[in-house]
Length: 272
Image (tube, rainbow, N blue to C red; front, side, top):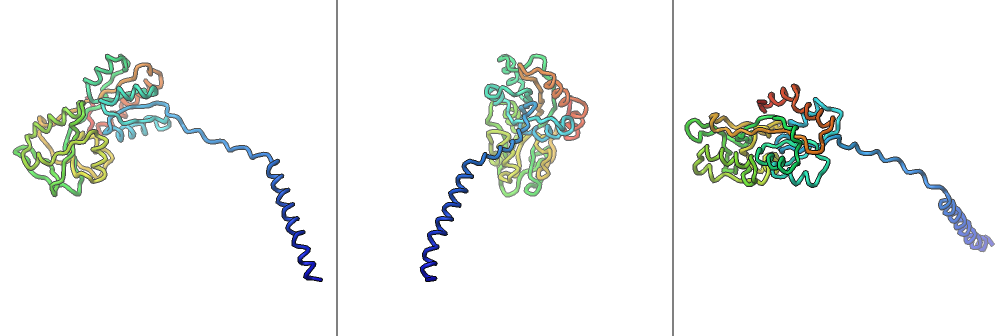
């Protein structure tokens, strides 16, 4: 008898379980869905600035002091890339370039505001090296620079059609390097590529703008050269055509004001 009772109850239990599951499923289908949580909107940039790669760090420092609460987007762009960037991005407000010829082309194309130019800073091309991998040597009388140990390559940017490439090539010619120094040179297509190679330790040294040293404690200025062998760069700041707004002018004034000038001078980016 108990055995039959046990056998008889199993279908009943299974039936009850099925009924409960069925009821639960029905409740789940009729229960209203919980309201979706609101997704926090990302803060949109109040301004977009194109600048050479080597100026990204000093610009961040200036903006942290002069406009700490404004979400300003800085994008790296060489002089030769600015036209294409303006074609693809209508939100760009300001442009910093080191190439007067390229700037002239932008003006002729109507891409820059005619009254918006200001000199931003001055720079110079020097030999930068990773501290742990270089030793000073005498290249020739009057020129005391640092070349890398172990025959590693010295980076440079000479392949692009812009002022930085032309000045770097001219600077190297003025040094009149001789073998084996001349055989160590390796060209990179952009400052961003050269900077990454220096940061990652792929190359121990590079001919590059001195501004690349800012906030890079693993790099150092490698010796000194006579003033007539230094190649200078001048950075100009322009408002993009059609973007001359009060907030754009305020940002331009902050980037060229006394506080910005003191920060640039501290880093050796001499103002005129």
